[in-house]
Image (cartoon, rainbow, N blue to C red; front, side):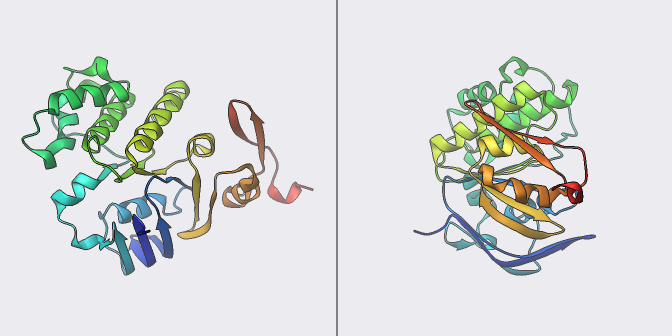
Length: 261
């Protein structure tokens, strides 16, 4: 079966951040969390996959074709991106911000209905009619998530790339929106790749982890309790894992790694 996404010996440098070489294969429908300390190159890797950066070496293929060969319109129908910074310079209505995700599907008679449904999925339907620049950071994050959902609404086997999608939200909303995002991707066969700092979200909502440190891939592993030693190595921190019928919880512990016996 042809992979949805492949990276072969990929390298990229962005200012002081250099990553690679990386070789990875992603199949349709996977849920992958990119974890690592600040400055590890997580967002740089996501931007590379999104085709916002050009690789300095190696090759990337998407759906069997070189990523560079896709036209912007074709790529927009199969790949949606939620960046970490998502400010809008003008006072656009919320529904227009969400509709921007539908630009590659001009003339779609279902646009208004899809915009409303996407806002509902992002728990932002109450913001319909508001101006984007009057919203709080958390409200803006929900509207931008709705934009990404609207873009990927009627495609299948696509690619959703999100960078800290729930960082500005309270814990309860973070959990519910991550679950909604995961269910949305699963229902359409989309692959979901997310940059995260929250280990608990990663372990409970994703199947696979890319652990990055200093621009290198420390591990490509399943999101299972057995990964705890790798996570401790990744963050140079002692961790404790709790598990019950509701899922996993990972807590940092006081004390250096060397103090562990």
